Length: 111
Image (cartoon, rainbow, N blue to C red; front, side):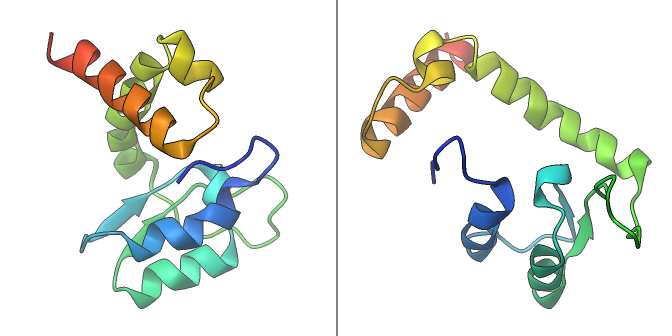
């Protein structure tokens, strides 16, 4: 679900969580650190492992050891961003952008 560059990550997080498969732990970055997202994750029976933002008064439970698993996902996104078309999002339509991401993923990981 692509959003504009000026839209905060946590606004699209609710929609992404509706599509989340059953899992025990959810790793997310600081952009998704909001009370609404944490409540939605916990309501589905999943433990959120999200580092707290620096401006939070009450720091939530967070495990840096478990958070290291997220590194593989970050490397995948960095690899996709090596393709200029994906990194700068030349395509205006979400369907065309998704097609470009699929082609880049195929070239990166299959060939």
